[in-house]
Figure 1: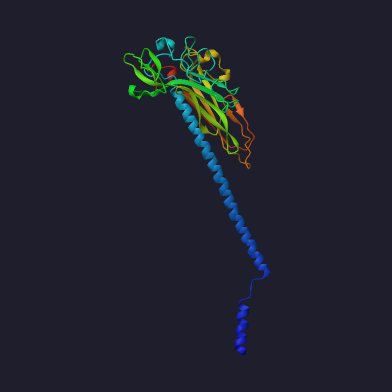
Figure 2 (figure 1 turned 30 degrees about the vertical axis):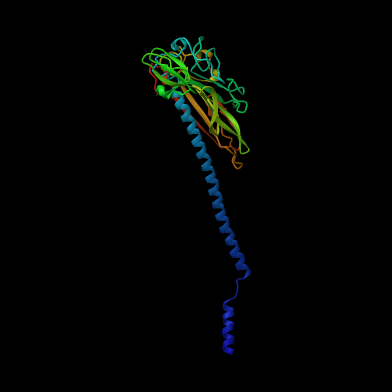
Length: 333
């Protein structure tokens, strides 16, 4: 009996619990480990959010630059016609203005060439009012301070007669003359001519409410039977253009000017003061703010600087486009 009791006593002694000090030390170590894990998790989450935000900015900004570059490269492309498109080149006539026509400054800056003045196939301005071209919807006004770009050209793929759509305008042309017609009309007869879809594009920035925020959006206007607009890229806060002028007709840019510093004659190509290049600036902004981030950077867009001082991330993109169609008689497509 004594031996059994002793054995039981020894067994109880070997199974004593932890002391309070040991428990507190264990809890402290556990809390430290948990804090470390949480710190790593929070850090990874913040890094992931930043990476995702900058990835979205990269995608939106590069897309905008690519789109504007491609359109400017083909500005003033008129199929097989070799010369400056004007009313005389169109057998003395042009269609009536389409519905909701966008009209810029100058006597001949609508969708189609008019009888007076130089037909402006490239034109821009910095938005100072909500609807400077008379074609923007009241629900999508121009963002004040951002630029507006307007250009005209034909789409570079030839259209066969059977492919003509009643909802588009077309230019049928040979090397000497041509005619613009709506697809629901009879195709004009011109010797040795090809058909090209006529296009009038307008780009500007507006703001739209999304998820409780006013999100900047790049808008594109396209010509069908009317000028219609649609948002194409979210998060584009500013677009700005600097126009490269060749003032001595030697094929080299002498000055890059913003739209506000251009004279009216600078838009009318006539040997000297031809616009032969365009610098594009695109400022992309994140869709939603990050309250843990303050953006007090300064962004230089040509001849202006923007310092937002808010909680949105931004990236600035730039490109320079040579306007090959400004100086050659056959155009790149």
